[in-house]
Image (cartoon, rainbow, N blue to C red; front, side):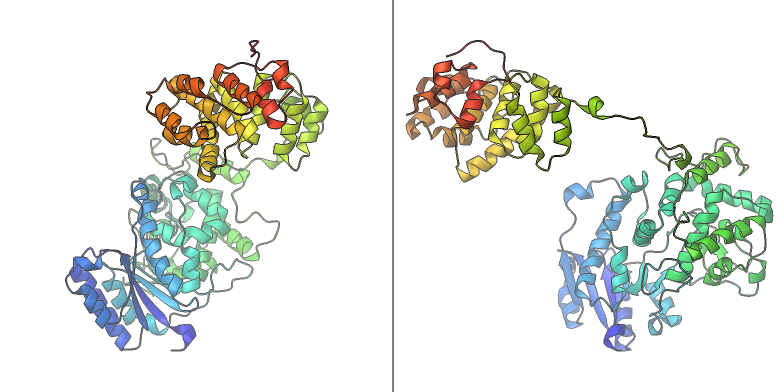
Length: 587
């Protein structure tokens, strides 16, 4: 084989059954010796191989590439979601895809339950004919380069196919890999089988995601069978079904090569109707199961999109959407759910047109669905500037802020500009500034917090910002006069048991080394909670008297008098001025 056609077998997973694993590997080794596959990779977790005596040496002697990785974190493993099961498998495959040339092909198999499928693929000549280009059907989007070989896709549960084996080109399998949390994406759990195949198609065709969101599988699968078996060619469906299944069957026909180990008849294809896709077909090419109808005969998919089924009203509607999807006009909303379509399926459900028991709830009504574009807001007489001004500042200042390119700087300048700023306004203005590490803003907020002047919802955030800032300061040992002020307020809060400080000793030691010797610091560190502030106050010194007064004012929660204020400049003056407080005491 040439370089562009190499076939790698990637065995993924932990070894659940030693016998199954070794039988599967024996068969793959034979395929390699026959030249039907080129290379073998075993991708598993650390420690898995060494559970079995001699296995590592056997794999080395057999020239099997071995990839070992860490398992998911304990936190990820505890997530109650089918996505976790898929993530495990996807990580192991991705490890192999990363080392394999992107134009080579990969047969991904599990360590167990894969042998039957491998043998059937060999029997069908798959390993001599696996490089099949995706079919170009008009303007229908082409997501992959080559078809992926799969077993047993289903209807109703879109993209639910066998995940024991799959074969595709490396770069195409890369497009399938994802680590999305499907419970959030669909507002419900999605089995791993679907997650293996669906990802790029949900991105390209959003209506398929919406269908998954509003469909209750366990209720609708048996209900649909009962309905279509009763009504046969007279069966009708919600309008969105025709669109969804037009897209889905086009995807299956163009992007997947469906093979099957189950027998079906080729002679009875003339008797297939659209409704059989929700029940079962006379030739056994469509087989009903409780999880959804299995597509065994891929020819029925081709016939469906080419207008070769029995003519019915429902089938005509389906073909209309097939044509639209193939044309894919720029302004046609063929791949999305519209407001009208969602309202129509809700009406279909409310009128019980599937003729089922009223207790059977097959539709999950979704909270977020497309707006009615004929009733969008009109904005001609809407003026928002004054209504949104939450800072109680001049409307011109508010408008200037909306044009800013440096919001933190301009907010700070505006706050400094106003002499009498309301407490709530100060809090709102300084929070975004504090998040950037502005120590003056951080001090003001923590001081307001000490004085119980901030909103309860911001308490934890202000503590978080302050401690994050101090972590950086203490790490670099850059301690300013305002850093000392911040720590003094934190120590007061700690002494009063209003907050917890895990790094109290480090804070006291690093910050107060600016004003005290090691012996004095040691005495303070020996004190119990509640005594730190008192002892710091007793021995706090500074060469510059006005800075000492500043620190004492922080401890005593007082303002400085005019004489001392006249000696202070810059950010220290802002801190000393305490314009955000209404306290009268001065020192």
